[in-house]
Amino acid sequence: VGDKAVYNGTVWEKWDVQDEKQRFTSSAQTITPSGSLTLAHGLGAAPFWVGAYLECATAELGYAIGDKVYIGFMDVGVESQNNTGLSVFVNDATNIKVRYGSAIAIAHGGTGATAGITLGSWRLRIIAEL
Image (cartoon, rainbow, N blue to C red; front, top):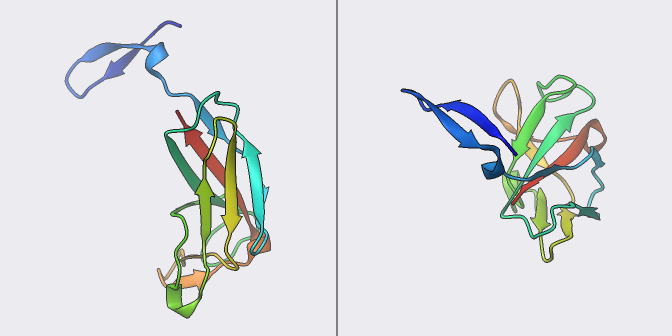
């Protein structure tokens, strides 16, 4: 509890720290084709917003180790691949559930062309906010 100063582009304003959102960020998760996982988020309520990003563990597709690629959820039929991507859902105040498709496709970091990742070369992280 306390105050922070926030610059709104014109003037510094006081911002109550209690207005900050509670956030959960998962540890790096292994991606298992057609697999699933359950993550306990510890937020005490069902999150209002959930996002996901891939973290490069082995350089590929124009990305370096440590690069983060924010991804959307289930994208069926990318470049004639069926069941690509992942679905993330929240059905209670405790857990976030993830269901992987058989593959995950992203834009190549150098060319922008859609390409399937090597699952073992990436880790998934989930972010959730109240």
